[in-house]
Length: 314
Image (spheres, rainbow, N blue to C red):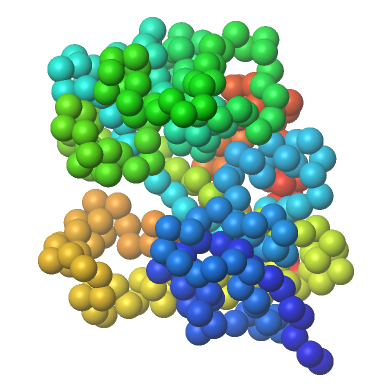
């Protein structure tokens, strides 16, 4: 029987590269890469059979009846502490200081980083999103529940959130490329200069390495060929393990003199595999994320995982 052709559009990561370059092929499937392979590529094209999307976008779309299903592979995760910037003269130094402040969130309010940050602020510090004035660069993908009373300002086209922070029009900015902003703007600093310690503490407290992106698959493919899901899962797991083994075996492939010590630190403080796949391994984190989305007025109800994700059983 000829393999089933499936197009794939996802980010260029060490854990996906073996699939993108053809080193790994799922059993019974011929993967066809549907977008250019290049570093920096993350969001996939919805035209593909399987594509990478923001986790909130998948859940919000499923809440609104979209036909695509989640594939429980989470290729992009980030801690948010290292991404939070303020000005060097600012006295802001903890999450408690966020109440009443003007906070910029890169792109839109529904950005995964913002969902995680707002949820943690409320859970841990009892700071409700409506106690903060939020600023974004883009219109929300989907309408919000206005009864939540949250203030979200869409900045004009051509205006930069980073420049607003530099000029004092914002107090805080959450930016996924914070490291680049620090190199470019000398008057900025991280709110958490010892961010690694803060992130390790968050991980030990919650068990979460916050999910940002997820893979999405067309429902009609799953309906006709349910075996595709476990076969894809197995292939993505194999690709990830190849990446981990490569780092353990010869990390000179990366252009940094300190990769070995960073890996030793990660393994000691966190764990080796920071990108677990599958629903059970991520159940608590996903259910927390869904709860945050509902509490923040981004979905109409708390959804069960089997309403969002394809079954992993063929």
